[in-house]
Length: 473
Image (tube, rainbow, N blue to C red; front, side, top):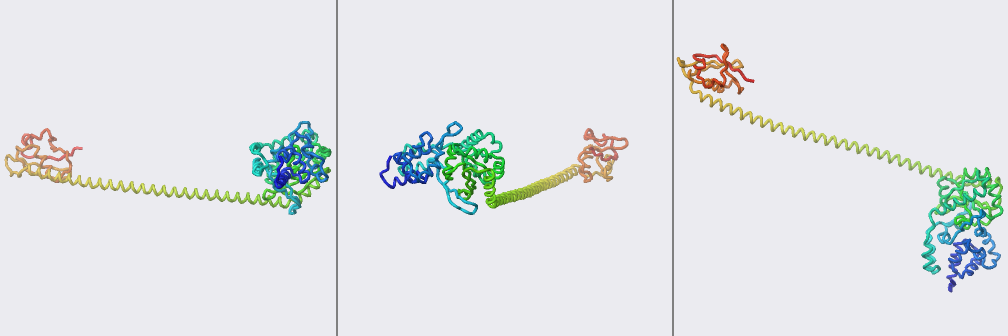
């Protein structure tokens, strides 16, 4: 669909160049014109193998200035050499690509920058084009479809499988290509403090089989690469390999590059190796790059080790602090438990003291009450005895001996009952026992309750008697 505005055509041309990586303005203008300035159709034709190369790249005879750009991507649209056609990068891969930079040059020397696609949501650019009026609303909805997360890893696995199949005789000593996407491989190299060795495979180039078999898979190069680099490879027939060939502007094949991660989502392009190389030449180049890059890698490794040591030190300090804190908390708990125990014991002791005090006061009161009762009883018993009679024929003389050795003597009328003798003993302050018996020795006779009603004369105690108090247990 043609855009009548001149500024609209310029915007479409700029977007087409940013997405495809083509720098030739005339060539890009011819491609867009051949597709009636339909931006999405032109990009889809450029990246699809289902359509003919002449339609995808050169709708009419290209100018001389377009030859380098055409040559740089001519291999991207040809078929796979192993006979199994693979899908080349489609419109989705290009639509979900935004640029960040590859800084080209040695360590500390920046010689240039090339664009490198960073994977972002596919709908971002499509919606941007929709805002500018370049993409219809239906196509905006279709462009929201995202590639699976494992697509780059699956593509890498396919490349490794094809590489081993095509160069099986030399695969025993081949570079160990990681089976993951480029960004994952770059992050792996950063974690391992190594450089990233990149190999872009062009299946139809005549020099590629010789380079792979005699140089790349030689024991000399393969062992050096495996020992000192993280190795990533991709076919320019694949989406990610094609994108990398555009980003690194690979114009000659075989193509190898050495890169390393930099700051602010940049990567440093340390070396490009294009064209046939002998194993000795390749080894010399890689050794030089490794020597030049050794200082920052060592510095990064030392910095990471220092961070790990600091982190470990902090963790040890935190662990020691936690242990000390737990010990303090345990001591505090023990102190509180001891304090609570002492408080409980003090409370219990106070309770017992109060109970004993109450019991003592109660016992004193009860003893006083008993003593008062005994005193009253003694007084009552003494009053019940009446006046002691004078000596006479009807008077009985009674001697009472107590366990303490004390003796008491009194006269009673012979007609007085034995009960009066017990009342007499109870009236005296000589005995604290409540149960006792009055007993005569010769003959031994106990005057117990069964004889209380007998008179002294009837009980055989007249005219005189000697009794002792026998306390009952």
